[in-house]
Structure formats: structure tokens, C-alpha cells
Image (cartoon, rainbow, N blue to C red; front, side):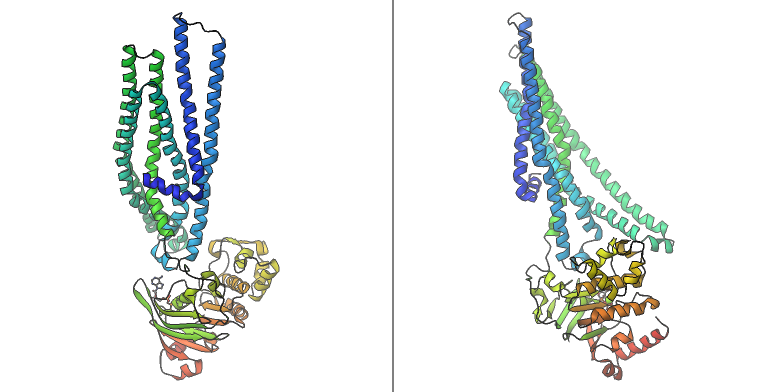
Length: 581
Ligand code: ADP
Ligand code: MG
């Protein structure tokens, strides 16, 4: 638990001082809670002496007492208020920063990172996990540390009257802390299972919601619901199991506290009976014992949560501790945009996908890559953009190894258009502007015109301000593709990579997309993965990829004249194009 606390303090960075100040205010607030009890006992003593005729009390004493109580209450509220001011916003600030940092991390890691971490895990990290830390770690820190500090302040006051009672109180607190350690042991053991179940329900829910059209089309409502239900049931049974383990520890904790409380009251009663303590002091000690252990009891629930936070922090740290792809990258601006792959090998999780790939795309020329599905074409694009790093060999732009460039400086020079277009849940304007965040409205419209999408955008209900659904679901495939081309157009990068950009576009729309692509690629260095013969034929160089190797290279005429994969490929394409597919 101490380790977890230390880590939370580390998390807070420079805001730590505010937490320390908060604890000082907690201490003072507890003092101001304890003092009225002492004051009341003192007043009771005076009243008893007054009744016994040993002292005469005038009404002005009531006024003093009243003033004393008001000062105490105000002091307590003042310090509680100060504590809240100093501590409460720390959690929100730290988690907001942490979320942004996490966003930055996800931008800087290689795509392999996403192969290793499920969507559920990552969504969980930036949503529930961080909220968990935000909600509990910070507030609980106050309850746990603040709780112990308050108990300590009160034990000090108690010790002022009876050190025996103070010792009993310390033993009670120590015993309860021991039961909390036991609980911590179980929390630590259960946390990974709990977290996995949590990730499972996020992944299952995301898949269920995203896949609803497929689920309906295949009449698989039953099977999908069964999956999601299974995840929910697992989550529930793990929670129940964890709760069951906590119950005995919780009881132990409460018993320790109640026994200590009874022991203090008992000791005070014995001393009062022996005439060593005034009745008022006995009452005061009984009240103290309840207040102190009330504080410690609150700590119990908080600790329970604090211990689960340890593994959550582990998980977040693991994500943060990942290898950044541009750790050593510096801002380099190539003076030409010739792309070169030299002896490049690459494997996804030990499965070799590219084998000694060599090629050059000279500046301002077009290279087309053709090859069967799964031959590694997309992987080549991924390596150029450093979505992944080559295992061996070198990928360079303008003679500079891409590993030496920062991701920002590299990607500033590359526009990519993919087969699967991703549009954000935002306006059309902002989706296009993503290519150049500081673009003016005029620039966005200009790009849209060149990408042949201005006309259909202005026909939308709110024109450029129309919201398009998550993934752009309210637009047709061709329209989405042209918006993504407008985005690339606006970016105006010297290198253009097109990965089957027209593959999912319907034939009626294809010539619009082709026209958009032609204006995007003018004067650029182009790598195109295409299936349309016209695009392939007009390329300066064609690379034929098969099972991760370049098996043929040359221009259309020379390749078509040879026996081999390319000739078979164009025969199939010719037939397909006759059928218009
Ligand atoms: P192409 O674009 O030519 O269809 P890819 O480059 O996408 O081929 O894929 C090449 C091979 O690598 C395929 O066999 C594919 O299954 C595999 N592959 C692609 N992406 C991943 C990934 N993220 N993890 C593991 N294997 C992958
Ligand atoms: Mg591909």
C-alpha cells in the first residue's frame, strides 16, 4: 500500500506540494474537531463542580463556551475548505494531463503496439483506468492519509489525558492496519483477473456495437449476445469472488477497531471507578475512542480501492514505458524525395512477410506495386511511413534513413490514401482540415474542388458543416474516399502513397475518384498499389511482389512480354475489367 501511495505521489509530479499542504490542513482540521470534545469535557467538569457547590458559574461562562465552540467549528471548516482547495483538483489535473500524454503516446508507437494490445485494453486505459485513478487515488489518498493523520491528531489529544488510552488506541489502529494488509494481498492477487475481465467487457461491447449490421445480416443476434453475456457474466462472477474474499478481512478489521474502542472505554471506566479520573474525562475518552476509530474505519474502504489501483498503475506504466518509434528521431528535412528500400526484411510476430526487398522510387516518378493478396504490399507502405520498423535493411527518403527522422518530420512529407477510409465523427470541414489544421476555409474548399467532392458536399444539409458519422457512415464509399483525397490534397506532401485507394469504390464513382487521384499526384513521388490496369500501365516502374519477394520489375511493356506472375495478373485483370469489377 505504501508503494502504491508513493507511486501516486510520483504521478502527481510537481503538484505533490499541494498534497502535502492538504495533509497539514487535515491535521489542523482534526485538531479543531478534537478540541470541542476536550472543551465540552472541561465545561462538564465545571458544571459538576458548580452543582456540588465548589464553584460558582455565572451566565457569562455559557457565552465563553459558545464563542469557543463557534471558533472551533469555524476553524474546522476553514481547514477542511483549505484542504479541499489544495488537494481536490490535483486528481483532475493529473488525469487530464495523463490522458493527453496517453494520446501522444498512441501517436508515437509503432502499429505493432496495437497488435499487442487489444482495443478494450487501450480504451480501458484512457477511460476507466484513468478515471479510476482520478476518482479514487486522489480522494482516497485524502481519506487514507488524511484519515490516519486525523486519528493521530486525536490520539495526541487523548494521550494528553491518558497515555494508557493512547497506547490502546495505537494498538487498535495497528491491528486494523494489519487486516488491511491482508486485504491488500488479495487485491493484488485478484487485480489482473479483474482488469482482464474489465477489458473483455469493453472489447466485447465495442465489437458488438460496431458489428451490429453484420450480426443482423447473418442472423447471429443469438451468438453475439451470447458472447457479450459471457463477458458480463465472467466480470460479475470475478467481482463476487473478490467481494467474498474481502468480507473476512473486513470483519477482522472492524473487530480490531471495536475491541480497541471498548478497551479504551473500559480502561477509562475502571479509572473513573477507582476515583483516578473525573466522570467528564471518562465521557471524553469514550467519545474520543469512537471518533478515532470512526476515522480509521473510513480508511478501510478507501484502502480496499487503493490496493486495486496498484495493478492499474502498473498497466498504465507499461503502456507508457513502451518503445517509442521516434525516440531518437530528429527533425530532418530531406532535400529530395527519392524513396529507397535496401535489403529490407520484416516479420509480424516472427512470421516473415518481406524478404530482402530492394527498390528505388526516384523523385517525381510513379512506382506501382502489384501482387496477390497477402504478398506484403501494404507492409511496404507501412515501413515507409514507419508505422512499423524494418527488422533489417534500410528504408530511406532522400538518402536519410527514416529511423533517424522524427515521425512528425517524416509524415509531414507523406500523404497516404488507404482502401479503408477513416473519417472522424466531426464536420466535413474538420475532416478535410485534418490534413492541414491551420488551413483556411478557402483552402479547404479549393482542395475539395480538386478532389471532386465540393459539389456533393454543398448538396449536404449543412454543407461543409454537416456532421458525418463515426467512420463516415452517412456517405457512400466513393464520397468518403474523395474526402480522404481532399484531406491528402490539403496536406500537399511531396510523397503520395495510395494503397488500393479505388478498390472499394463503386464503378459509377470510380472515374470521379480517379480524377481526384490524378490531381493529388501531380508532380509528386508516388507509390501506388493498384488493381486498375490504366494506373499500372502508366507507372514508370512496376514491382511484382509475391510472398514478400520482388519477383519481377520493369515497365508494363517489358513485363507483359515476359512469362510470369505479371502476365497472369494482367490476364485476370483484363477479364475482370471486361466484367467491370
Ligand atoms: P497485401 O497488402 O499484399 O495484401 P499485407 O502487407 O497486408 O499484404 O500482409 C502481408 C502478410 O502479413 C499477410 O499474410 C497478412 O496476413 C500478414 N499481416 C498483415 N498485417 C499483420 C499484422 N498486423 N499482424 C500479423 N500479420 C499481419
Ligand atoms: Mg493490402
